Each structure stands twice: as structure tokens, then as C-alpha cells.
Amino acid sequence: MITENNSSVLPAVVTSPAELVRYLQKNLNRHEQLGQILLKKNLIRPETLRQALQIQKSAPDRKLGDILVDIAAATQADIKSSIAESAGLPQVRLDEFAVDTHAQALISSTLAKELHVMPLMFFDDTLVIAAASLPDQQTHALLRFTADHPVFFVLSSQTEIDQAIHHWYQNFSDEQELEQLEQGNQDLIDEQHVWNHADQLAKKAPLVKLVDSILHDAITQHVSDIHFRPGEKYFELLYRIDGTLISIRQFKIGLLPAVVSRIKILSNLNIAEHRFPQDGRIKIKEGDQRVDLRISIIPMQYGESIVIRLLNKNEGLRTIDQIGFDPQDKARFHDLIKRSHGIVLVTGPTGSGKSSTLYAALTEIARDNVNIITVEDPIEYELASARQIQLMQHIDFGFPQALRHILRHDPDIIMIGEMRDIETCKIAVESALTGHLVLSTLHTNDAPSALVRLMEIGIAPYMIQSAVIGILAQRLVRCNCKACLTEEDITPLVRENLNLAADETFYRGAGCKLCHFTGFSGRMAIYELLTVNSEMRDQIHHGVAAGTFRAIAIKNGMVTLAQHGIEQARSKLVSVEEVYRSCM
Image (tube, rainbow, N blue to C red; front, side, top):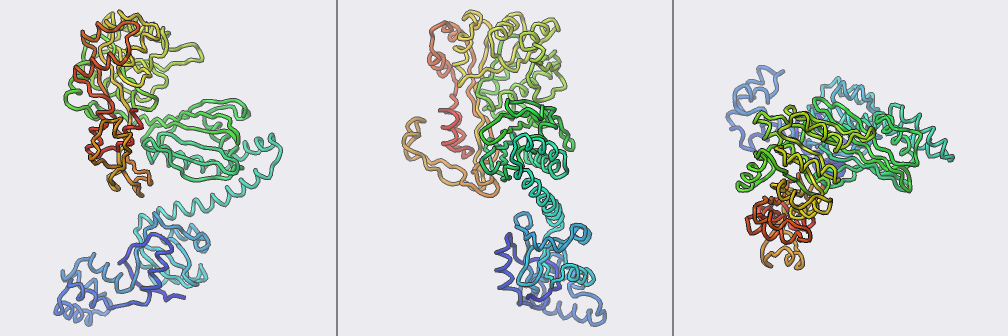
């Protein structure tokens, strides 16, 4: 058993039960007088201590630390740290601390919230409790009586204590109920009964709170996608953060049908259908944020797999300055989007930031008081200065149908979400040739390939020559975590393919707590910008390879995707491996 203490702040920082046990074993019985600690640390002089002790003799109710602060002999921070050192109290970081649920169960959530304390663990027979400052004797006695164990206090910040109370007590009650629900659903054998039972569970409080908390956490952590991945015995919850899938936790497979049903209920999907894929959407408001959730549910071997894409209407709108253009390319891109007519394409794979770049361009153009109309599926961001059209394929209102009507609506600028078929491409080209600036996206690997792709779709070369004025190809690459940079080991083959010197040094993130041990933190765009000049127009014919267009573009100053990525790698912003993965 340990001795109950009486003190208030923290000389050491611990983050786990094992560290706390080691600290208590080593330091528990080390006590020194406050005055001696202050003298040893040269925070006060001997004569100052004698003066303070003399004052305390005439006012025995006053604490020595308060007297020293009052006579300006020491700061409040110095006193607190010295008091903690004299009592041997550690500071506990609760955001990383694994609480013993058996210890937690001895103090009710109501009492913990009322007293602002968090039970952590047992040390021998003693209950260790975190508090922001040492409770008074009455509170001390109440906690000891309630727990029916001796209590020992360690210190933490009030914010961390409140967060721990919310996290651990909510999870504690919810986990118990979820375990019961999991087991109850796993005991069912008939598949129809499983789903009927799941529909009932989906409306119960624990399931509702579980799904709500997952969505809330994902929005808070700026997650782009939520994955529920079913396995034989468990299903896994994963978040995609900065382009990397991170495993969050596992649940027993018996809970999956109820989670699927809950998400189907929220997105107005058919909860009785489990054989075919379904797509849906949810609109939620989280504080001041409005978030669109795009739901994809597909039957798999062990159950229905769910992917939820998060589109935050209040985030993601960038300016041209934030795209990452160098000064020369920024001027060239700015010139393209300020022209009165022509087509500007942004190309790249899904998730490469094409829409964000188009919106950055529209934000810049909108300053010129022009009529902007967009045709999208879905509308990813809301732009106050534009009229935005949402396509509805279920009533046969797609890109071609919308574009025919747009041209009668007096537009100056037209933004087309994607040029994916010949009819859409033809209308876009005709719009560009009749005095409109058209911005759109196309799925190609690089900028020169976009010209070949348009001819493959069926657009006549002479129309491409007259309409297309510029093509931006881009990728989103994951940035190195600055907190854990380490020298990168690059294979000879990668160096050869990227034309890198054998002795040139590059860096990558090794992985640390700040980056979820991925080595990455944030993302940035790498790009290549091709402007169509007269020399290139002369080469736009059937049978001309993309390599020809590339050679002309490089001769006229285009920096390729790989070259731009290597420039960022030389600045330690990204790793060579990440550039190679994205561009080669």
C-alpha cells in the first residue's frame, strides 16, 4: 500500500501505467521541505526564506508558498513545481494513458465530473487518481469512502482530465452495451434473423452513438474517407488521412449488420437489400461546418463493405497562390484563365485535386464580374459567385443535357466537372469556339496525353487546335513529417529512372506519433503545365504520339511532373519514393 499524499503539481511527465508504477516505486517516499527545494534550485536566497518563515510564524494559517509569492520572492510556477518535487508527484499525460477500467468502475461518471478527477489504475491496493490540484480533505475522504480503497493523487491538466472523463466514461458504458449487442447478434444463425435483428439494433442508443462518434471524429481529424472493411471474425474501421489509410480499431463481425443498417437508415438506402451495391449521401452539420457524406456499400465475402467520402463545404477552397505554382508557371496559368475563350483542362487520376484547382481558378476569375456557370456531379464546394448545376442522372439530366441549356443562359465562363464522352466534349469545344472560356477535367496520366485522348474520344484535330489553350496535369503527394525526418535509402534503379546522382541525399519521414507513424503529414500538389502554342498546334493530328507533344512542351519551358517532384524532394518537402510512386 502507498501513503496518501497532500500536494499539488508535477516534476515528471509519464504517459503509461508502466511508467507511473516505476516512478511511484522510485520516488514515493522522497519528501523534502519546500524551502529546501527552493534553496537547492537557487530560486530564493537564505535570508528571503528566513523572512518568509518569520511572517508565517505570525500568520500560521498562511502557506509558505503563498507568502513567497506575495513578497515577490518567487513566481507561482516556481512554487508549484517545487511543491510537486517535494512530494514526489508525477505529471500524467492523460491523452496517452491507458486507464484501468476496473479502477475506473470504482468512481461513477457523475462523481468524477462533479469533482473533476479521473481514476487511473491500482498501485498495490491503492487507487491512483488524477486531479488538476490536490483535493481538500473532505473530497479526499469522499473518494476514499466511495472507492473503498486508499487513494493517491497524481496531477494532470484540467483540460486533459475533462477530456479523459468524456472519453473513458462514455466509451466504458458504450463498450459494455456494444459487447452485449455483438454477442446477441452473433448468437443468431439464420441470416434473415440476423438482418432483422440488426435493423432493431441500428436504432438503439449505443449503435447510434457509435456511428455518430465515428463521423464526428472523422470530421474533426480532417479525414477524406472512412472505410469499414469486413473480415472473417472482425471488421476494421480505417480513416484515410492525407492520402494514407490508417487503421483505427476493430469490432466483432457480429456488429457489422447493425452498423450497415444504421448507415443505410441515415442515407435513405434500402436496409432490406444486401445483395447489390448501393450508393447514397448524407448531409450533416458539425458546428459551423457543413459536410456532405457520399456513401458506397458493396457486398463482399464476409459482409457489406462501406466507404464514406467526406466533402467539407467549408474547407478545401484554395487560391491560385496556394496551389504551389512557381512564379513563371503561376503567370502562365493566370494568363490562361484570364482569356476570353478556349479550353483549359486539368488532368490526373481520381483524388489528385483537379476540382480544387478548378475552384481556385474560378475564385480568381470571379473577381472580374463575369457570369460563371458550373455543371457538376457532385457539387463539391459552394462558390457564391457562380451558378452551380447538380446533375441528376436518374432523370437523364447529364452533362450534355445541362450544357445545351447553359449556352442559352449567357455564360462567360463554363466549368464542366468532367469531359467523359464525345457529346460532352463536342459541346465544350463548340462553346470554346463561340467565345466562352471552358474549364474542365480529363482523366489522363500527363498533360501531353490529353491531346491524344481528345482525338481518341472523337474530337477532330482541327477543333482541338482551335479550342484547347492549356493543360495542367497534377498529382497530390504526401509531404514528409518534419518531426521525424531521416535520410532516405534510394535504390539504384529509382535513381537511374529519375536521373539522380548516386551521391545526392534526400529525406523521408521515419514515422512518429505526430504523423500516426506513417512518416507523412499533409499533402501538396506537383504538376506540369503545358500551353498550346503555334508549334504544337501544327503537330495535332491523328497518329502523333504524346511523346512528340511532350518534347515540344519541354523545349518551350514545361517542367515535367517528375522534375517538379524532385525539386520538392530536394527541399525535403517530399520523399523521392513518394515522387516515384506518383509519377512513374
